[in-house]
Image (cartoon, rainbow, N blue to C red; front, top):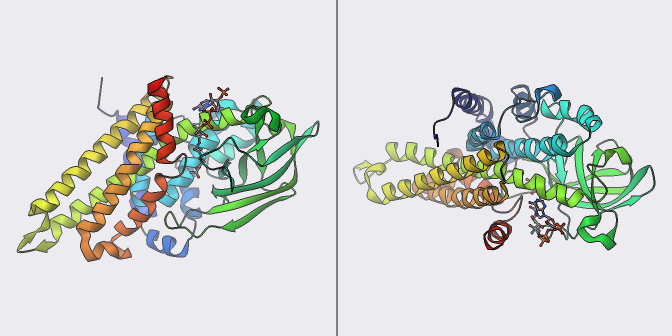
Length: 379
Ligand code: CAA
């Protein structure tokens, strides 16, 4: 076993860190305040290869491994979790899903623009009445021979308005339950597709989260991913990898909270010495550091298993569960360490605390991860 990162991995991590500090940090507070999507920065991330990191270079991607992706996600998320959720959905759910399960025509048509950040993708599974209970899809895709007729509503869709390509799960044959669900590629311009209201969120406020409405949208049959009825399995397989991305996002938030707390504790004086010299703060820093280390190892292990073509569903659920709990706890402690300064926007940690919460909810709540983990352990 080798815990050292290769030169290539270190270079990816350093490039992501430099980009985040130079291009994402300025303006991150304003974007959060104004709920402004970081479009310019996402385009730049695309040019640097961060939007299609694992995609084969023949489709315009970076041809990198999942470990590189974890390292880059951590660095981007330390600074701007709104940018990193866009990156995660585009990489793990949309690009990976299309490249792994799409037809050659679908890959050639959609991947190059998605992998370079010229276009952004969205993954549309959740509905008003289907969040954790993802098999209860009400959106319908009626089989009309050469096309499907898509009707329904999707909720809380990341990249809802910034995306151009949408992977939409819909029920074709209700009698078959989850085996009757299909995943269809929907283009923004298709008639009958409307982007609905933007959610006013607690955190990741720079990310655009929308409801989507489909009314008699004609989707050509060639836009279905996989065989008839593959849609739910597709969603589950894609989410297993997605959880490595969101786990890494949570890791970045946890690590960002730690780094900011260490810097502040070494500067801020109370009772005649830097607060880093008070044991109350030292113990918090120790706990936070331990959580970051454990979360990082879990994310990297899940990535390693994926890269070496081993089963990674359990490992990705564990990484996502642990890292998101670490993000929440570290962000709360970072606010506490910063005291009054922690409660105002200028010091960033209150944003980390608001951003951390969603990592315990999307791509499967903490409770769903426990279902996945316990099923694996008890089988
Ligand atoms: N890979 C392949 N197939 C899988 C799978 C996996 N990881 N997990 C489940 N399946 C298959 C099962 O084998 C089963 O198929 P068969 O009937 O052929 O055996 C089928 O899927 C149904 O599975 P279950 O019977 O286990 O279904 P369930 O309803 O009991 O529970 C669940 C499944 C794990 C709870 C699932 O519903 C789930 O993961 N829910 C959470 C949904 C989620 O993560 N949503 C995130 C939305 S996307 C998002 O958040 C993006 C964003 O904005 C950042």
